[in-house]
Image (cartoon, rainbow, N blue to C red):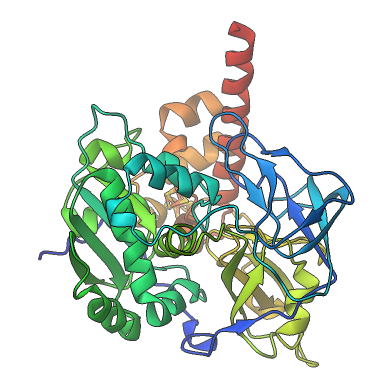
Length: 450
Ligand code: SF4
Ligand code: SF4
């Protein structure tokens, strides 16, 4: 099978050795969890419990709202506390509900019965289970998975891609899942394939994860009804971007403004596949996730199973804290390229917290924003072939009309153009701001028309 090399991208140092291959660990039970209500794109779910209610692990605490929304479940058994404002992972204060642990043996809610015979189960029921299990993408915008698995009938999907590229430096949570839980990941993928009515599954994994590749290859033997092809991909950032991954594996190009389903593909992250397996086979909604806790300052970096709602402070404490001689310069949720800097230790882990990364002061990249040298490196390396320097100037000057014309909305926010810029210009920050402003403007425009 041919592997296609997408244009642009670059090779950052990956630093995955800090956490890769270490034994998975669990966080001890905490007295309190703070579950953010709006954890994904779309509307917030509606709280359906009140203060003092007794909940079990996995009890529904908020029902999905309209549109792109998924329900939320209690991460532990205990009782419902106050509804509070907490620092959100993407800045600002956000609404959250407290769950106070009862400290007794953790008991799962059994409202979602296991579906062991999923192969003989109607697609409608499987899709409903993925919604009821609150399954989303496990990084980025946490897009609801049941929506991804519902292409309109006019879109002909023939290929399911399981995204195990994990191209962000430092992160190894997907690697850990594929090494240790490959069968569960692939069964989750096979459930997605059944829902989509297809048999072809590609698993894309970067070559720097040989153990994961071997484990997934072995686990792929004997899963009936699907044809699974595991592919080692060149190590190149952002190989795990949906459009780049689709091109690498199929040679199909998703043009600006189009979606993967427009070229017959659906891409699901391996973490979501694991969550689907757990929701369908075990009846467990998504209430905890594996997260890489890493960086030079961390005493005991590794991959930790963390209940959703655990505060950053407790996670760091359980990873041994910070080295005595460390001068931590930055804490990031996610990886160094696309993650978000955190300014409070109270921020809770969400469904999309793929990593918690600490950087030493000396490791923090400074984007001082010197004058553009017109060197063209940003354009050469942009995986979306955007006119980066022109766009950057337009966005900096708040000329969002020009930015829109030059396709700023197609920007992946991958950070490559900032990383390769010799003038250390904060290009990606300009694009993030411009995209937020443009979305806001379009939302206001739509509301005006109503
Ligand atoms: S952040 Fe956007 S403009 Fe910059 S390299 Fe990535 S896709 Fe291109
Ligand atoms: S890489 Fe930096 S200096 Fe070079 S053209 Fe792009 S923005 Fe200008």
